[in-house]
Image (cartoon, rainbow, N blue to C red; front, side, top):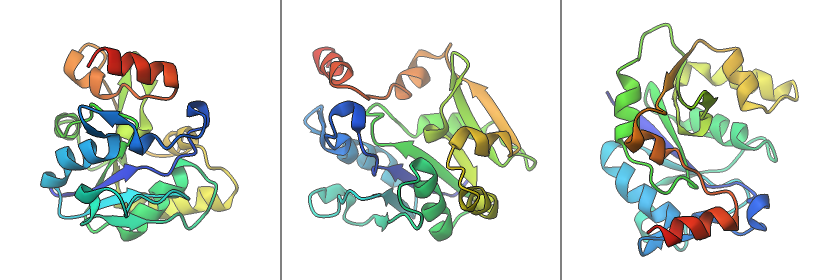
Length: 196
């Protein structure tokens, strides 16, 4: 199934002392470069959400990506999702956060096994917790995203509550659950590096 892919790389990283997580190093390359390398072969449209950050000048692997800027600023991940859906060329949009350095295409291939026409989104859960920044969204939800943002609500969980969503628990699958490990603090980053 063809899909566009969005890598979320525009967050403020407040819990990381505002250090750009896309530029953190893992296995000899930045988080962003690693995710781009692993996902780019599976799409004809790779997008990177910048927010107020810019990544186009110093990530060689990302040079062919489409960089999307938020239309609605300071709206968090919803702003990035909205901007990407506006440009999305395929029915499906795979979303990946740049702070999940172990992300692989296998997660999305697994989630697609649960796809049905009635679902607007397919979202992995890890021990019951939704992971909306590692999910699959259908382009048709664009108007709902826009309407919710224009109402002043930028919460991803509220969006999912109003969509037809398939939740897929992956906590029992070690490979898939590791892909959902996100790095939010310097302590988590040090632990990641120590286990490299």
